[in-house]
Structure formats: structure tokens, C-alpha cells
Image (cartoon, rainbow, N blue to C red; front, top):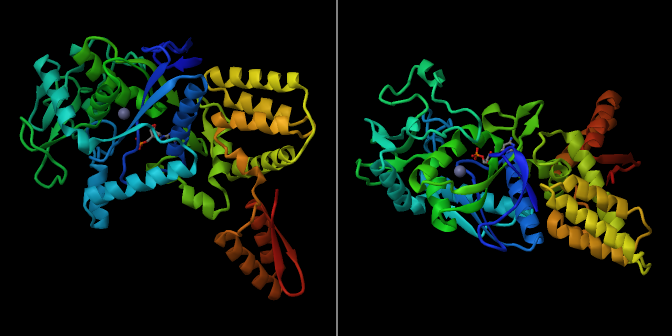
Length: 461
Ligand code: AMP
Ligand code: ZN
């Protein structure tokens, strides 16, 4: 199996610490709001990697953290605590908010067929592990105390910046900020531990008084706890490369005296109009919002699988429509295969299996693997093709076995509402509005046929 390693900037053969086993750590969600589809692209990537690792015969131990202690609104150490902000807004405690959104997150990933990592580690349940880690760093001379926390001295770690190629030692951007912490030895030094102001709700006892952990220490401490001093793969989004993962590397390597991670893998952004889909830009969609517009979780999964994880993916409803149509067609073709008693030449099936496994094992080239499946489906429908597709679906995770289920089309309430508005416009002989609404329905994948008594909606396949 070949993977692209961000650290070495090239594709490499996966060589595991323990033969036949893979230990993998994935940065998980900060649970102060519902994850959006950009986040979900990251977890779909994690899931695809999990599936390909297992497909290649490895025994997988996956660990994912849940950041439920909150962290500051920027990756650096300034800004407000997201959990605290959400708590203030809703009148709930940060613990209630974290529990609610953790639950929602786990439900959402299940709807997308994203396999749950073997170990889900909540930050609040690992405070002691993090504290011990920070104390050890301070003892070794990598951490120092200021009036508001314990900081990591990046000048003590000469290879700082090796993942992103930016060692930030001469990083003066932070120096230009008004609220710069003048006690820091270097502007890019980051907080390992923060002293809690009285009003900070989530706080714990430490040698430095009531306080709370920095965000980066979470991943260093919990990955080590569950996967050991050296493990195979660490995943996250590309936004984590320059700060969060550099900081994780600094913390872990400073403590251990050797690298903790062998392969760093990062998924590119899902964008909207050329900009990252993100809460702060207000351009996000959640799974529920997509469903309201008539797209199933599998339509979204298909949409994502069509683009390699290291390429940017632009989110558009045209793209979602195309994915929905292609996915429905895939199911329809497979349904014919399931019912067929035709035989397919064994060499054709064998060739497909070879192409598919080579593609997905070459740095997760799922689009190429799906291409092979579509090519296979150009043959006359057969049970052999159906079986081969089910085999491929252990990697794709598209619930292809659902193809034989009766599809009943429930009209989404949003579509129904537009159709009703259109019918009213028609009755009022407002043809312009009626036509505009018909076009809107079409863009959502629905056709409308008018009769004397009313209209009939059909979903475009
Ligand atoms: P966060 O909760 O912001 O730490 O994000 C959770 C995960 O989603 C991280 O791995 C991020 O890198 C990833 N992520 C956030 N926004 C996007 C996006 N627009 N596209 C892909 N991944 C994203
Ligand atoms: Zn992390």
C-alpha cells in the first residue's frame, strides 16, 4: 500500500511499526456546534483510509480525539474559547454543549457510513495524561511559565517547522498584533497549558493553579497513550499542517527524543466559491440541510469520493445533482445485475479486481477505482458483476447492497413547499412565477407535471 507523506512530500510504501498492524490517529472535532460538510470531507477521508488499510489485510487501531475542553477561536493562542462562547450564547454549560454535539457528530458520521474509530478519546477524560506530558516537557527545559500559562519554547526545538517548511522563528506577525503576549520568548511559542481566569468555566487543578490544557497537547498525549511512542499514520485537514501538527511534532519529539509519527496524511479543503467551507465564513452546510434539499448522505459520499483527497473539492449544488444522478444510476445498474443469471467472463472480473485494488491502494485513488467499476458495468448485467461491486463497496462504503431495496421517494418538505407555491401561482395565472418555481424544482432534481386537479412530482433519475 502506497501513501503520500506530507512530511517527506512524496508517495511512500507503507511500512508499519508492527507487522500486519496499523496504528492511526485522527484529529477529531471540537464539539461546540454541528460538524459541517467540509469537516465531513475530512472524516470521509479518514474513513476511506481506514477501509483501504483493512482491505490490505492490516489490523487497524484507530484513535480519534473529541475536543470537549474547548479551544481558542484561532489556532494560535488568542481569541475566545469556542465552547465557552457557545455556552454563553445558549445558557447551557460547556459540558452539556459538548455532550450534545458529540452525540450529534457520532450520529452524523454513522449516517455517512464513516466507521467509528476503535478508540474515541475525550479530552476531558485525559486531563491527567496531558498534565503529566506538560510537566515532563517543563522538566526537560522545553516549557516555561508566564503569567498566563506554560509555553513551549520553539527555539529549543531546532527542527520546528519541518512539516510545513516554515520554522516560524523569525515569525514577526504575532509581534504586530496588539494583544501579543510579551512574556513569550519567541512570538510563535505556543501554550501547553493555560491559567484559567475566574470566569473560565472548564478548569482543573495543576501545579500552576486552576488551569486548563492547550489544544495541541491533547493529541500528543492521547496518541501516545493509545498508540505508543511510535505509531504509523496521523491524519487531519491541510489547515492543521502549519500550526497544530507542527506543535504536536514539537511536543512529542521533544519529550520522546525521536519522531512519534511515521506518515502524516492530510486532506485538502472542501471549498465554496474558491474559499474554504468554514463556520467563520458562514458558507457551511450540514447533513440535515442537505437532506432538506433532497440529497441523501450517500449522495454526498459519492460526491466526495469522486475527487482525490489531495485535491480541492468545490461544493456546488450542480455537483451534488450530478452525484445524486450518478449514484442512483449505479444502484439501478446493480439492481439489474442482482437479478441476472448471465455469466461474465472470469477474466473480466479478475481484471476489474486487480485494477480496483491497485487504484485504491495507490494513495487512495478512489476516483480511478470508481472508474474501473463504471467500466465493468458496461458489460451485460450479471450476478458476477454484482458480487464484484459488493466487494469493492467494502472500500467505497456506498451501501451498494441497498440497490435491491424498493426505493420509495418521500418528497422532501422543502420541495413540497415550492411545488405548493408554484401551484398557487398557476391558479393565479402568474406564469412567470410558476415557471421560475418550476426551474427551481428542476435545479433540486424534481420534475412537475400538471393535471386538472393538481400536480405530480417526480424525482429526476
Ligand atoms: P475543526 O473542528 O475545525 O478542528 O475541524 C475538524 C476537521 O475538519 C479537521 O481535520 C479540519 O482540518 C477539517 N476541516 C475543516 N474545514 C474543512 C474543509 N472546508 N474541508 C476539509 N476539511 C476541513
Ligand atoms: Zn490534533
